[in-house]
Length: 355
Image (cartoon, rainbow, N blue to C red; front, side, top):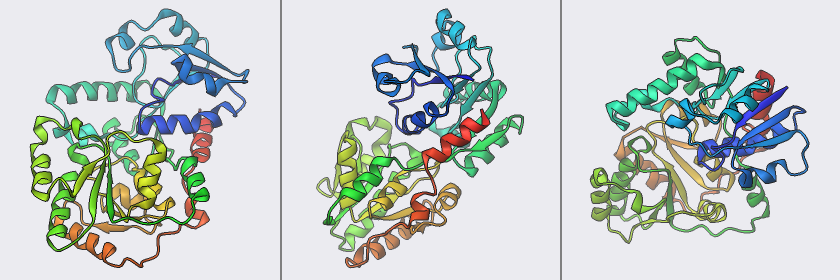
């Protein structure tokens, strides 16, 4: 079997992690692969392998050129294979072999205020195209599966293939010596409404007024805020800039350092497909406080997390203070069965089997 994999997403955030970590297992499966993407970025993955060929491609996903002017030579090569797999829901025009896709979530129709009407209409067109073209769709949680089935009207099989912890977090955990916890609270994610940062800022402000000494670190860049984010910027000013800081871009090593030394990770999301930061934090021995949205209750049902009522700043504040007031509380330690509950080896094996 010759499988083309769209690797143009390999350096993106969630999609890129999913693709990068599954790729070695794909290549070890005994099949032949065409890897669509940047030659320099993909060269290490194919080094010494006779079953993989890079198809150099710089066409942007979801672009006019992808749909209507994809390079004919690439289309001919893809169509000479057995099937095409995309780790997202974009599919180049002209592909005649069976197509398989991964849709991590279907947030835009579920939370239409995240984009304009035109933006929503465009995204729905791409979703429907993926529903129509895909032989099967993979997704990262039962929650996302149910939403995809709702919008696709069950006309395509949907298979759950969870996201998972990256091996580097397990390696960091194994190599780390005694870690000194700091009086810091972490938030990881962008500033879009569905990440719930506004509720965390409200709760943090209330907790600071009650004497909480901790500082809030936002893993991300303040420069990414737009004029429409005035409500968040105003709340930060009310709290005091010395209590809230932005890291800007951080390396994997620095991210793991922040996660391992923090007293608490708070994930106040209103919507997720899977949500990896809580798992990463627990692997590194940090307490986790997360909203009780259905997908997080599904993914983290067996884990030592604390849930708070979604979009309830007062409940978030109370739970936050409760977790931080006891400085002698032992750090969470995940048993082997929870460390291995979600792995990319499992995920990739399900995808290959279904292909």
